[in-house]
Image (cartoon, rainbow, N blue to C red):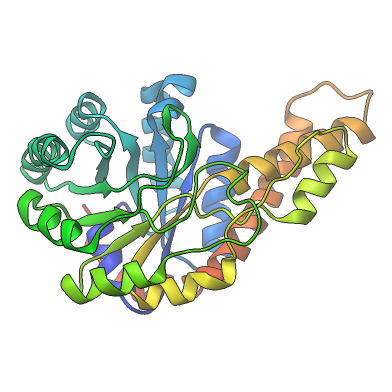
Amino acid sequence: MIVTTSELFKHAYGKYAIGAYNINNLEQTMGLFKGNLDSKAPFIVQISKGARAYTHKLMLESLMLTADKIFPDAVFAVHLDHGDEETCMDCIASGVYSSVMIDASHYPIEKNIEITKRVVEAAHAKGIVVEAELGQLKGVEEDVSAAEHVYTKPEEAEYFVKETGIDSLACAIGTSHGAFKFKGEQKLRFDILEEIQRRLPGFPLVMHGSSSVPKDEVDRINAAGGAIKGASGVDASQFRGAAKLGVTKINIDTDGRLVWCRVHREFFRDHPEKFDLRDPGKVFIPEYAKFIANKNELLGSAGQLDACRAACTKR
């Protein structure tokens, strides 16, 4: 059943984090739902502005409504990832999304507040919840980019939440978008999370750019003809610690793309005579499902499905 992220967060807060996974096509969607059901986890389907342009927004929205019918035991939110104001308003009007993210973090804080408040007003009028971002993550996520980290200031986070009325806040604590997150040792600012949680007790926080970029996936891609050098990611063992500090949603996109790349490179290397797109798809769907289930174990969301369903109300 489709629920709001706020309902998921109420159940998860302080105990575990909900996995938020980006999808672009049918194969990802099937693997995502199977993996979450296999691990008995609630989850968030993320559809970005870029995904809506690539597959077409109506196709993706139809996939979500169809998945809700063929996987009746699933408990999930449908969330717009990194939307501008225009895209947020379109998703709010669609009747499919239960959550939207307005990303005006590249503007000065007062402009960010102004834009975010308009989205909150429109979303709340239709029972849709809103995530916003304060601070900026280094790296590139489709058309969202920043050259350096701009860490979230806890005092500004408190002000921003109270001024906008948002339902969750994406914080910049040192994670990065993309596959090349760190040079040398990562330095995530959990002290920032601690101070934000102190100022906003019980308020749901979000970590973007949290793919771990597994070395074995990168090595297998390179062995099958890839050329991904110097990739590194977030230490997934830190997810549980972040959850205890109020992080209820952790975004993972790049790792899923690596699984897709690895499966397809290895498949066509090992089966050069093949050309049917369904053949590698049959390999990818269970591999992606296994990847999702493993992530949910790290997030602590595995095994939480039944209890979360009992605590949530269908939209």
